[in-house]
Length: 341
Image 1 (cartoon, rainbow, N blue to C red):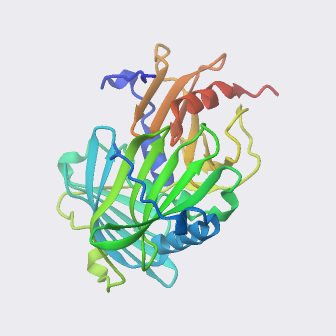
Image 2 (image 1 turned 180 degrees about the vertical axis):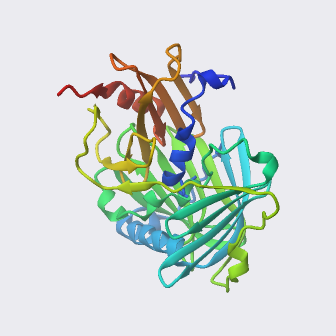
């Protein structure tokens, strides 16, 4: 089924803070897009060993956080293609990361621990509301993946080669049609994610892939500092996410897919809830409508869906954005209702 899309008229665009908010979930990654055809490498030694697959996923989660690496990756989502250099290190338990966009206007993302700052060249100052295409580097992958067997199946599918490094191929298949599946290629030595494909019902929606990467080398401190200096603009993209079971709200989400847990978003001007099943994430944001004529919106870019509609009887607009099939996102949006005290 085709997905309705909108033009670039700002009156029809989703709320301005939505993409900036989505950064935190897409640090993750990050994921973090349009994919290649999936090639299954037959290898019975791996295909029937889900426990071994889970060990590789845990290794991947540690590698993303703990390894030192310097590389260039491409991230394809729909018709968008980003080429990014990533430099990452971990010193005394604190992560340091620099992301340099190699195409388009100059933009760099600097992360120190949980603080994320975006640096723009001065001519790009008007474009401050955006997310960061980091795909599978999402922190959702850092959750306890072994606890997800009720909603996903994990299978190793043999070996391959990415960025001139030997890899292990791993599939994550959803048990229900209300979420996406993943194809992952992990570095054989360290477990670092070198390539991924986001898939839904046989279609490839997003692609992430390193073209060059060095793992385990010395990262000099100067490599983790922005090179955009003169007349630059910088702004912080960090959001505080608190895992709580309750919060004072004037609205509630009555339905989410099985396995998704909620977190409360705390940032001035943001009234939202994040949901994650440990791999995928999506957010629900409710805000006052600036324009009473704002139409309902349903659009998709790669695997990222945005659903926006009015909240009945409240003068507010609901926006659901994240890694969900559009039917699932629409059902989430339709389940949001005002709380009457």
